[in-house]
Image: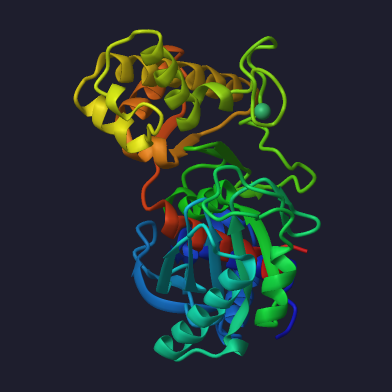
Length: 389
Ligand SMILES: [Zn+2]
């Protein structure tokens, strides 16, 4: 395939971000001259990147204007995702749609080699089901739970990971040699953010942050409609923002990081501590093996301890979000992760606090996180390979 010019990349980027866009709107957005835009679109359609899919009335002039979409079959990405408890993969087309999807639990004896073999078996099966071949794929997008060494393509050793012995796993190299394809690595929070952003936020929000709150905390940032990456950072900057110099010990070795206050792990630890000190709670019988599910049930049952601890954690978390908003001008905050998905009270409390501070920002609660991660990492592969130098 021929290298795209800067103008062609720009137009392709807009169409991918918006899904469906009229020629007239592209003219406004790109600020290209009309004949130039016409030429660029013609090339992109001829080369098979874009398709004209109908037309609509141009309200200003009363003439019809073409509607452009990406040609979904132009290329594909094989996306794989590793969380603490599961791994899943999918073929994603050029229009960011998932064609086929496979998912597996991570069991205690799962080795990195066995996982890669399973992913490859899934790939062959999915190719068979969808009538695709290896050469149809632009590459592999790997989204994984941190901490990650992005430069070396290594999973350093995730906490609370369901399989044992996963330390310093050179996962990028392993996947690359098994599949014979290039692998792009990112963390689950960045991929989830990209997935959301490309499914409806692109046109409306220039700057957006995503924070995932679950066992640990992760974050991603979009500035000027582009994903911000800092490949030198291993620990998430938001999760390990220090909010109390003499505070609780964090898993990173520091004291007082937000993750030690606002993650599921932190809330469950606080609940256990309070119960041991005599607080009454329906969670008492689960002491020693308290899980997110128990906290969720307790909040639903209006258990005072559970409600109080969730609200406290949400208030601390909200303060950190407000700090963030004071530093970076954001239009959208998307919150996801298992805690946010299973306990609506957490999200509601964060939004209430931020609104009290009159922050002019829209809050969204993430949905379909797994699918968004797979779509998001696919977008990153496409943008890295086709759109940005
Ligand atoms: Zn920390």
